[in-house]
Length: 109
Length: 113
Image 1 (cartoon, each protein chain N blue to C red):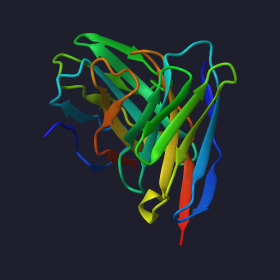
Image 2: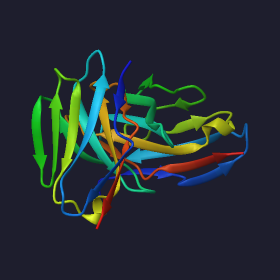
Image 3: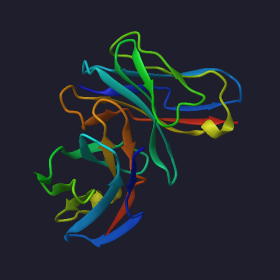
Image 4: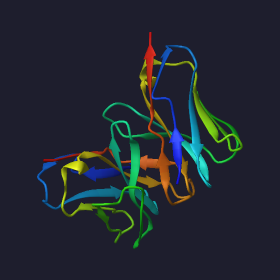
């Protein structure tokens, strides 16, 4: 099976940079995705890494290293609205998708 | 507007009373999936469908059924709900050609007493 581990909580200051790590165990996968979920809301897609390296989308970047079974989401210029839960997810193609348990990010002034 | 819709958004029911949660997407996506979300456990996949009449079990399929008779609809059926199925349910579809990019519906909060 597949499993992913993320820190349960992270706190960071408004305007700063924060990195949310995700380590995983799998026998094979197509890529690693990241989702944001505000309290009471649905997950929304942020980023996807099919290949090793860094993907940048505005203030958000995501990184994948298959050799280290590791990825991270980097949020820059933190804003209060970035307070949310962040999930990494392994995609086994169009088949099983396994999510991590999520990291609750609190942005403080 | 491209979206995934779910109904109902909130449901309180009693043990054993069959219910269906509907899910529909207007993006012509082939892949759809159902998840449940419980505190501390993240999202867990219940069932997924790669196309019409093609469905398969996810990690937690027990107590659930699905069908995919049309591309746009993917209902979740609980034939005999039990209290341990009290949860927040999300339907999702994947943009064709973008394997890691899922679009989620707004969620259905189900309480089984």
